[in-house]
Image 1 (cartoon, rainbow, N blue to C red):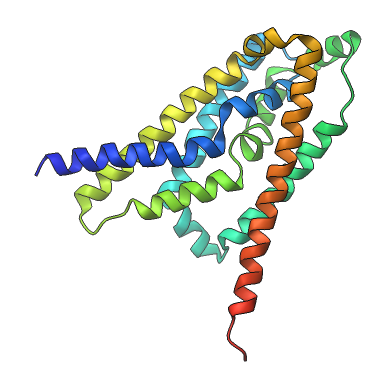
Image 2: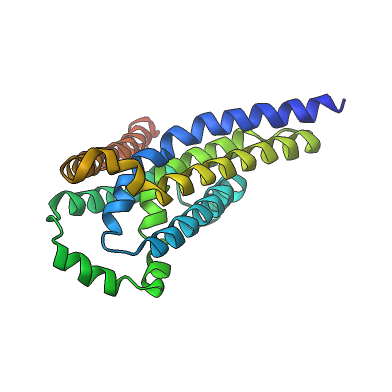
Amino acid sequence: MMDAPLLAFGKSFLFALATILPIINPAATAPIFLSLTEGAPEATRALLARRIARNMFALMTGAMLVGSFVLDFFGISLPIVRVGGGLIVAAQAWRLLGSSHVSDDSRNELASSFTPDMAHRQAFYPLTFPLSCGPGSIAAAITVGVSLHDPRVALTLARLGGGVLAIAVIGILMFVAFRYARVLLRPLGEAGTLVFLRLSAFILLCLGVQIVWEGLRELLREVWVAPPL
C-alpha cells in the first residue's frame, strides 16, 4: 500500500514536468530577460533571476493548487485568461522588436538608473508575468492541478507533491538560465546575440498571437454550440 503514493508521486512529477517545462522554456526566455535588463549590473541580474524564479514557483504552484477555484469564484474562464494574457505577451514582444540597439553611453545611463528598487518593482511584472510564465503556462498548471486530484486523499496529496516538486525543478532551471544568460550567449558574439534576441522576440510575438487565437477559438466554439434561446 505504501508503494501506491510513491508511484503516484513519481508519475505526477514526470507528468507535470513534461507538461509545464516545454511551455515555460527558460532557455528561450533567457534572451528576452537579457534584453529587458540591458545595462543592469550583474549583481542586479542575479537578484532578478532569483526573484523571478521564486515568483514563478509561487505563481505556478498557486495556479496548480487553487487556480481553478479562484477562476470559478470570479466567474473567469480559461479562454478569457488566454486572450488577456496573450495580448500582454504580444504587446511586450512588439516593443522588443521595435527597440533600437543600445549604445555604450546608453548602457552607462541604464546601469545607473537600474537600481535594486527598480529591479524589485519589475521582478513580477513584466519579467515574471507574462514573459517567464504567461497565460499558457498558468492554464497548463491549472489543468495539471485538476488532473492530479483523486477520490483518495493520500493519493491526491502524493500527486500534488510531485507536481510541486516539478515546478521547483523548473524554477531552478529558470534561475540558472537567467543568471548565466550572458555567459550562455557569449559564443554568439554581439551581432549574433542581437539577431538571436530579435528572433526570440518574434517567436514571443507569435506565441502571444497563438495564445490569443486559442482563447478566441474556444470562446467562438462556446457561442456556436450554445443552445438557441
